[in-house]
Amino acid sequence: MRGKPPPSLNGLGARFRACGPRAAPSWAPPAPGLGWRPRRHPPEPPVYPVEARASAPVPPTSEPSTAAPYCLTPVQQQALAERYAPILYFHPDEQNFLQDPNTYIQQSTLRQERDFWGDKEVHGLGEVPPEELATIGKGNETADGQLFLDHQNEQLGDGIRAGDLGNSKNLYQYDSATNTITYHLFYSYNDGPPGLGDAQNHEGDWEKITVQLDSDFQPVEVRYSAHSGLDISRSWADAPKENGRPVSYVGQGSHANFPETGHWETQAPTWVTTDVAASGGIRFDLADRPAVDVTAQAWYGGHVLWGERGSASEAGVGDTTGPTGPSSDKGPITDATPREPLS
View 1: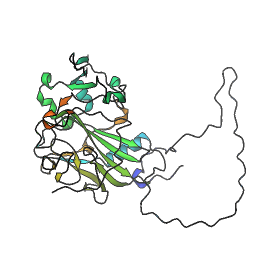
View 2: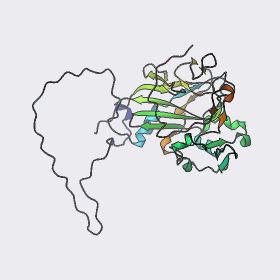
View 3: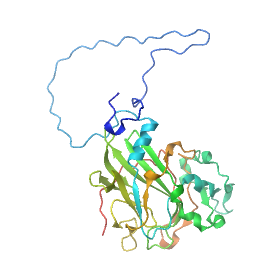
View 4: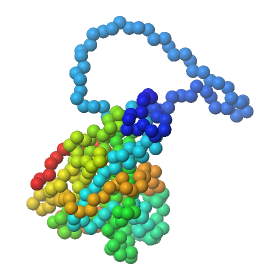
């Protein structure tokens, strides 16, 4: 259905489109050699009044609707993404920061794992075609011969692991099915939370922050990515904000996102380690970076592993490796809990 644009989207000069399948056209395209002829739909059947029947009253709900009343154009999606772009506070001891995924691809080779013969190089340094990554299916996540991007810090120097905030992008995704905006955050290297040594270190790290919108395209909730099903939620009223945009405190090394500073539970026992979020480090505003629709990236949707396979055997937690990136399986955060820091 069509509707009046909400105040937050006025002035964009774009038409609204109905969500869902388009209505059938009332005309037929030209048939070869026959020219164009109009095609009329059969008349709608008459609608007769029916007797009103008493029904049980429907109790009012306190939850606002989050369904999108109409689809947004790409211009409107970008405007929303820029309006609610998060502000990140890094830990004072953080060493690895955001990077443009396209730069990471250029700094990597594409390899295939082989247990007994040594890994096979599929594409060399600077020769990995991003569009080929999009064709790698979900089965790669559990395959015996996994395809992975191998970041060439050995050849290019460990400095490339630090990322480059000045080169990063505001990678956003508007999802009409959930009426959310998700900000995808990519890091070249993950150190793991303090206290585990190298046990959870790995190349490549994807994190995200999701903003839930209501039917007027106003924010009602913020969801922060953590690990192992420990994602966190805050109502918009309770979420920390600056200039009307959400704030996230980034966990040291792990890059998990948190609404407050402090020590946060991880999948490991708390006596072993916790995620640590603190202020006092670099303040980074995603709104200062170019807004880029992640679904329009050539590599989007593939299931390549964004990092070399690594061992975490010293902690007894198996292998650690780079995660897969944004795809239809890894979109907005839809399930999160309002948990609090441990201290």
